[in-house]
Image (cartoon, rainbow, N blue to C red; front, top):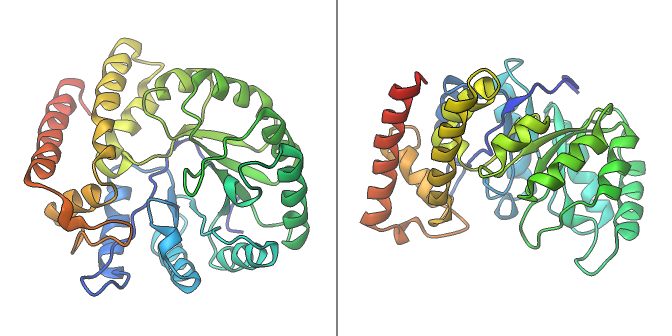
Length: 308
């Protein structure tokens, strides 16, 4: 792997641009990567749910991960999932092939290792078997992906992963500040770092020792999240106000995502189209577009007020 050092900060959950004929648009993907970098990203999370990974073929997942890593080079870490299969054999193949693209870590999906009705012991057993099938020099992480069901890691499974020494990144979607605090304590002294995906709990968990943010709203407000990460200790009062603004802004992600983010980026000249595989961008209304325009307007005002 290229590196096993993952800095704290902002790791956008990357979109996958598509052309109007439903192919991966690598020209737009390059522009999108450049935009994330210009906005201050500390790393990139490619081939995740925001990337519509369950609707990408294995070859598409591999090529997207490879393109992102090659485009970024050594500027920031690139992590990638693409862990969507059910069988242990297919999962091991996915992990190896994504790792071969040169990404800095391969991110496993928590719900792939056990059914919703199965216990943590079963989950750990399945993970152990998977770890035995893949080279131990592949840096790994976890993502509590909500689809097809959301499996929130228990402290028992967090400790198991931390103790292996093989896990470096957890995209945390539990949305519970107290639980995140316990996870941070559980992982203390290990390689495992916690990156919160939930805006409402982000500031509190940064104060507890969370390593940063990895979530949807970095497709709208990357530099504002970066400012919060860099200033939550130095400017506590201002950080409270910016965090409150970001929390209220984050409700826009409930409006036909990822189409609303792609439409926003398309209308700002970064993507060539807003086509999605998970939903129909044509279902976005004029009101939805007005909402994103107003979000841009008020974000600029906040930037001016706080020197972002």
